[in-house]
Image 1 (tube, one colour):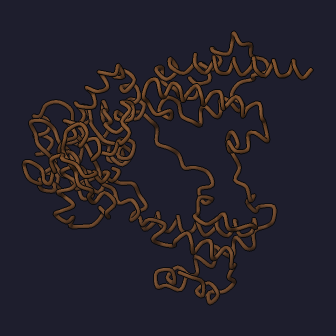
Image 2 (image 1 turned 135 degrees about the vertical axis):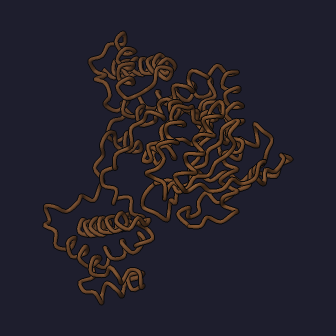
Length: 426
């Protein structure tokens, strides 16, 4: 999960250790069965958290799982040695409501272990919908429960074994108050009349399909903007792909195999021999020398690629261009987007919900750019057309109930203003 925010100076009571002590780490099939039995005897929702090794490992697998349920207590599970022995646990907990903070971060790794909730309550997402300005776990625990969580080890290498005692204390505290936090957030949502909206969003997160790989991920290489030739981009692409294959095979974070700065330096320098390659920054180090021939082979493939196969300098866009180019390319669409954004901003203020939770900004941009054939749709048909478009784009019922009429009014006003301007010009 995300690193808890550092609480500001406060009179909140510090939470330094779990009330019942740090539970032992369970790493055997026998212990998993016993934990499943105890959890089955508990009541109510299940607090869940998982620790990964982002920045250290290639995979997003869970290296520690924390569970807590009323009447059962807390559990710390090392899933690595028992990955194939979690069936008894799944049989019990997969039928429960899970409570997570920033659930979309942990659910994919847990799903790899066949651990999937029947219902979900996301305290971080609930906090956003309730209008909280700060939705980190520490900030919300302090605000709603009057307890202070210290910044811990969320960014640590959780693939480390054995796990240090202070890390385990931190991990256990992540679920210590999660059930109480869930109830407090639920109470706030109910008071604001947002319970049904939150339930729809939680279900959307729970049932979301795994995100597919984004195209041209190599273009996100830090520093690539300094390169000005398609040939250099081809070298970046080949080095990035080679690094990614090595990282996946070794389950090591790509940047720990070769930093982006080294890829960019090689693309700019275009070395033609091992000696030239190793003279570049980083490539002469002991870790990188081990793969010198792989790196040089990647550079050679990019350097000798036929011109027709070179990547374009500009990244191809799937959808609207960057907003800062709209005014030049289509000023009518730019004005349409301004109207739509104003309408969404007003809705955000009225309901105290971040605008991005009302509708995804990308969906609004697509709607305003080329989502509808505005030239042929009458004002009377506009609202229904917007509703159909948002439905196809995955907007939930409550979002459309709030946004469709407001967007329709904004775009009808835009159409009228445009028509008046055209009439005056004639």
